[in-house]
Length: 500
Image (cartoon, rainbow, N blue to C red; front, side, top):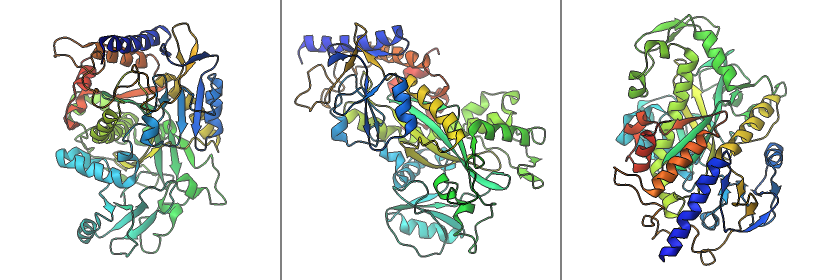
């Protein structure tokens, strides 16, 4: 590569970061595309009213071609993502299928648990099928209970069955998961939580959680699984798509806001149990008499040690910390694959061209610990209830602000780049795999004493995101999770050492 081309690329990144700070988080770039009046969004697959309205309110117009600033919708193949130009942003991360397919997620957690037993705590024991069938049968003989059988790539509760340990079933691409025992119940009903997560970078790993989410309830009173009730989906499954088929269901009654669930936890547990690590107390969590609250496990030893007794006596805070812990651990388990695939396709560079938007489905147990159910890519933005409207409009508005989806040139004009093939790309575009680690000012890392140009740009980008968080909370980077990483990368270390 000629020195002039390297310089031009570095200057492009400088314009991006510098302008983003000056324009309150609106990224800028030069010499790409043609000036137009409005930014453009390209929708791939079905979209909802809330998505279209939010983009429209932000001044976007819908693109009918490959000229766009933001691509939103269904996951796209890697050859599409390879053609993205500076100034184009897609709402998916290369390699995300390691965690959004149920069988891949099962294997991911199993692999991570081999290096650190903490990962065993975040999800029920599960096996991917057909590869893990023999292992499942051995495990089931020693654990004669009930299991949830799920299709590997299905959604909305489709194809989920509760089976006994010795039931016969068709072996296909699926996951079989140990039935989660002792779920926390509200009014005697089982529920799970949909929590919205945004990943803005994989190297360094940067993730945010939206402060509001959804609690989704089964419509029938909970019963422990038996041969007689195992087929009653509205007892055992909390998926909205499954339970809305009940004729008497009031949509607003069977969905709560996450903050309402946390407030309920605070009221039910406060004064009845101090919920301090190392103590066992009694509390009525269901309104059905006394239950025991076991000793809360130290899911993250470093975090617990850094907190005083006063800091960890609020039940709602413990519950929220446990939610965040499971999300962090899941993303850290996925980090090696996310980072590797992104690097192979030139996505670990500036300006950013990808972000991840996920719906984590999580379940509280009676002791307020949390189990991961699954991770959803492109989570539903449908607004069938008032609560949906309240949460999702707000969440999407802050999401678009967080990732900085508007683009202008240095004259304040909006620019709409166009997808290009590898051969058509200008040399100042995204680096290829062979060049990826070698370009001055792009991916070159410092010597540990002085920061490289690229590291300085990363710091500025992270600080710019901080100013745009809105109602999102940053959960990663967090140095207390360093022991969970397979390898500590230089840029993660850089972020841990920053003064926030």
